[in-house]
View: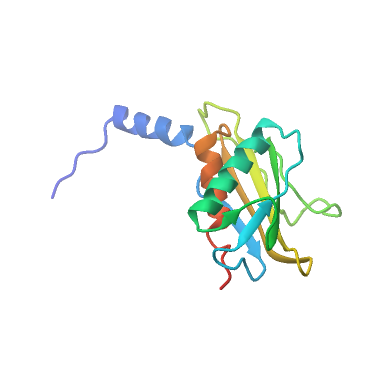
Length: 167
């Protein structure tokens, strides 16, 4: 079988398309026994939420309902979340990291021909069991991208809750 070499246009197009992509799969860390399926939960809010917090809160509320949880003013679990958005070129390392840190979240290098300033969005969730004040579930999800929008937020929250049910 004889194959033709790829044309310059095909190769240039592939380079341009691949260079514009920022991100990838969300990176998830989780711990704790999880939440009892179908349990009543409440979501702690800070009152005057910023737009990013409102996006995460709405996505979290909807994702919990979709998974069969009951969301109200009080419940077996109280959920608290936080969101941080930073330039993807900066990383997070322990305070005593020195010159060669063991990165918690490594910085990302920009891609050639990248059309946006990539940012890293990190969402953290802690679910406390109200009766015992113990942590039932803790998750952090992080993803690089060009902007934080509804679809990205819903994807991050979905990933965070994927393994939230008690095993």
